[in-house]
Amino acid sequence: MAPGVSGDDTASADIAFSDMTSSFEGLSSSEESSLSEGSVTSHVNPGVSRVLGFIEKPEPETAQKLAASDDYLWNCGIVVGSMDSIIRRIKEHIPDHYHKLSDALESDPGASENEEGIGEKVSKAYSELQNISFDNAVLEKCAASLYAVRAAFDWDDIGSLDALARILEPDSDGNLVKGRHIGINTTNSVIYGKDATICTIDIDNMIVVGTKDEVLVCPRDRSQKVRMLVDKLKEQGHDDLL
Image (cartoon, rainbow, N blue to C red; front, side, top):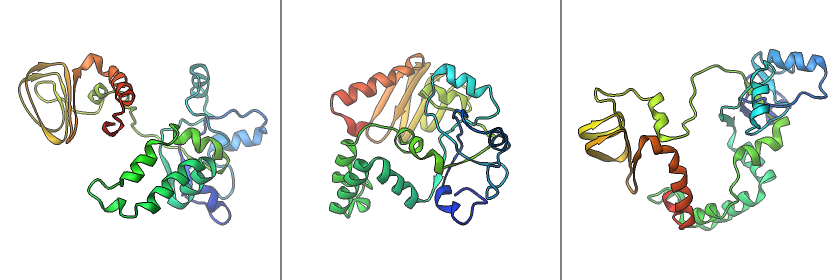
């Protein structure tokens, strides 16, 4: 919930997120001024603003215009809200998602108790849902009920495995390691192990990812092609590996 909100504002403030990328066309100058100062109503603390609009992934030209202005904030994808409020918005804006998952949970009450933490019926229902982001499906449609919090902190969009080089400290051989790794003559590589020990011999400038069920190996300069692999897995019906 956004801090400093009380009374009737509580229900509309229980989803707070760092975004205000919208067009101010039609707003009065006083509204524009109060928005840039981070205080839109008397019920909101300085630094917290009502969201007037939300644009998910704007076109490059629009994005550059927004970034050059002090009147907009950029959404870093952090959403805070009560579970009841978020579920209510999902039910309102993407009812098919809500009903399919609710029906699956009701027919598989022990789903959260099994080894994987999710039931087969729930997993099947999820795989049949429309592929749409939460931002597009929900946030854009209820922007008027949202609050934005201005904040400054380090952030990185990990768009590829090689991007881990920006957040992990290299070892003496130039390797970026997360998890358990034993290597011989292994240099300048990204090694990621989850529930698995990664062992390597005589490799350089590679990416090696290992989990309990999957292994991925590719050159670091080909890391963007992982998206092609994801598409191929989907085409072949291996959604369980994603």
